[in-house]
Every structure is written in structure tokens, then in C-alpha cells.
Image (tube, rainbow, N blue to C red; front, top):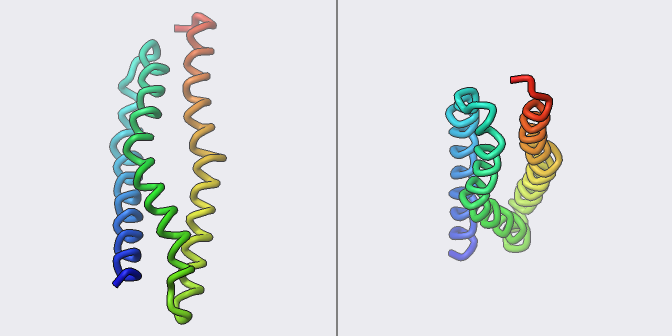
Length: 119
């Protein structure tokens, strides 16, 4: 029963994250085009801060369950659990190495653009 609950928790957290990522990619990011240059740095900073409160708990649940699943998996599914953990590590690394810096660049680009007075 404990294993089943852990697996269902992992699946729920992962599906939540997938849905959230699709929403952000399809709805939220295209709306960036409607934010004025003057407001964009503040808007982007708020986006980053508020998004953290939504994705943080789900990411932590996903991570904790992914770490625990290999330990409690039956031998027949141990490799699958290790693969899932490995993929999650890749996702975390790509988020830290690609997504977070990309948002930082967005803010810096607008601040630089503003400071050049090229409105």
C-alpha cells in the first residue's frame, strides 16, 4: 500500500507539472507580448516569484517520491524507478541551467533597452 501511494503521489505531481508547463508555454508566455517595455521587468520578476510558489511544492513532491521510489520498488521495477529519477535530475538541471537564466536575460534585455533610451 505504501508503494502504491508513493507511486500515485509521484504520478500526480508529475502530471500537475506537465499541465502547468503546457499552460505556461501555450497561454502565459505568449501574453508577454502584451506587456509594455516599461512594465516588463517588474512583470517578469513577479512572474518568477509567484511561479515559484506554484511549482516549488510540486517539484519537491516529485523529487522526494522519485528519490524514494528506487528504494521501495520491487526488484522487477527498480530499473524503471532509477530511470525516472535520472530523468527528473535531467529536468532539474535543464531548468537551472536553461530556464532560470533565460528569465534573467529577459529582465536584463528590457532594462538595458530602457537605459539606452531606444523606446
